[in-house]
Length: 480
Ligand code: XIL
Image (tube, rainbow, N blue to C red):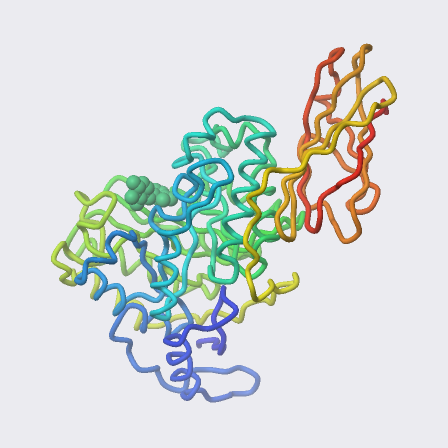
């Protein structure tokens, strides 16, 4: 029995095609008691997108902007797909080639193409250890953390309201059996880098569904257990995560796991939606077709599995083309896997439930341009002789990142407290390398265990992020 709702997930406005499909579903509805069921099966979709829309889901593909000049490619894209994911165009190296200098030309083209054709856009990816711009290579610690948060904020602000789901953090867990985080420059800025990225993304685009995205988490294994524990912890502590993306790159050695559906379900049970984000399956013929069908059926069995994205259109478009992992061959001809995917979509399943309304205020209708002016710096006060604090603020319309340098006096420090005052309306949303007391007005920041000791004349840094305007007055530093 299918639960039916008239709204789709993950977006505040419903695209025209989806609206049409949903309308066709709702005309076939009969109310039985308090449960709404399909009276008869809705008409079969003749394309992937239309068939997925019958259950309120999107069917998307990764798109490389340079392929938009290939009419064969675009013909299939516009006919079959209802969501696009930027292949490389929204990655850090593409969008911020120099510090705080943003380039959106390619990403904007993809978004415009999608919008002109009634498709949604998945954003990929705000923070990732790969495909970073070269200038990040010399950064570490607070400087890298600030650069990452600024990046997340600026890019999510630029695309605010136009992205139905963002991969906020990509591939942060280690392969192998540890179940722990992957070592990376971002990880070395502190374990809280992932939650800081999610908070920054939520502040910048409150309407987007925020996803953690990874590979080899499709079945239950040490890596997916690690991600599961993180999501459970985030949900318990109110870190704004909405979704987990399962890349789903399958090969002969790593086929669709037997517990795929059960594993998706256990994540949903934590209170997030799940999405299949980069599906491709090595192989050909009927075995490949059967695997695609299994993936689609697993998603459709779960009402909060809200959409499927394949990692390209034709085998020749694939990042691993020798595996012939996609639904169309190099000529754009439908493969057996296309037919099995369409059939599985048309077989129906659960219907995506209504979106939970965002508790945060909606974004303004006009997107303010991000500021690219250099951060103002407040000069340190003389201090009490024990230590001094200087604050530099990088702000944009609606938010800021502050970096605070604590400098020890001639006696050195074995602990420090920095006090400052935030302007009215400002709120601290994330803090790193310090512990705060208060989030608005007078706020106090105290050392953690590892950075309590500061040698005579030496310094240490901490940072925080907030909404509203950043601090403009002096910060004071003292021993605890
Ligand atoms: C791939 C792109 O498809 C290629 O064009 C690029 O050269 C490398 O990255 N996981 C991801 C994707 O999250 O962004 C990657 O995409 C494939 C692995």
